[in-house]
Image (cartoon, rainbow, N blue to C red; front, top):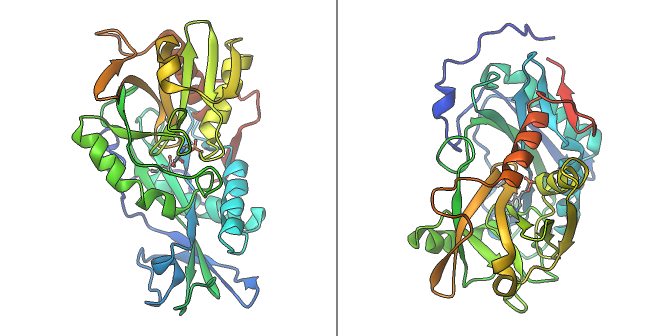
Length: 349
Ligand code: PLP
Ligand code: COI
């Protein structure tokens, strides 16, 4: 049991962006000859791996992202970490890596958060502790075959908003001419390979003045898939709340939660279905990108067909539906409003 009164780091929490900050401890365990080591906390943020490691050459790696937040009463809360564990193992299996048992995943996450208590942003600071579990294929291996050894690591970093600007930042997206993922490819798994290919698309979007790339389905280039680091949600002018259905997108935990809130708390008619960007754009009343890092970021305009297309009217920062969903979601995540869905997981300190 740690002294919960241990001093917090003297960081300017409110000024944090989404950047790596070195904290005190990280968890590491190794899988070899068919079994996992017990694992332990390490001080060094540096991983030494063989130059032939499949993680380096063939992107045999996956990761997760979640946040620990401080509640008004000081409790430290994770949001639906069981779903991160589940998604992590789907990615591991897809890439022929060993699964990390759910109990091991959870205790590694809790141990790492607890060991870095001083780095968990205090309640009301606007920041949170980002938790990054990762699994990499290490060890010598030149040919294209699975690694013989794997490292499971969990590190944490205090972070502020993913998109620069406080609170509900309105962002813009630019439809990418590049595809992110094929229908039967790896787009629905949280693996590094999907993101390396997106770096150039993000750069191009930013050159156009957008925050992020928006990907359409790669088969027909009609239907919205997702943004580079977030899923998409839309409130239509007929009172529906929709989100793209696609085999190529990451099944966002934030999106799944928001859809539940939209249906059960706002009594909206919700649906996951293919959304034809050009044919349906006129019916978009409000749109947002959502994810652990992005939280819920209203999308003000989209670049496609060589032009900007506005969703929000001039001067409008966020619509009422997205504002209400943001307040509900963040309220639950921070322990400010009742967790009637059982989504919170308290980390004992
Ligand atoms: N889509 C992509 C490509 C992402 O990287 C993320 C971030 O994790 C998301 C969606 C949102 O997923 P989640 O809400 O589970 O964080
Ligand atoms: C997250 O939201 O957790 C992500 O992994 C997105 C990443 C690009 C920062």
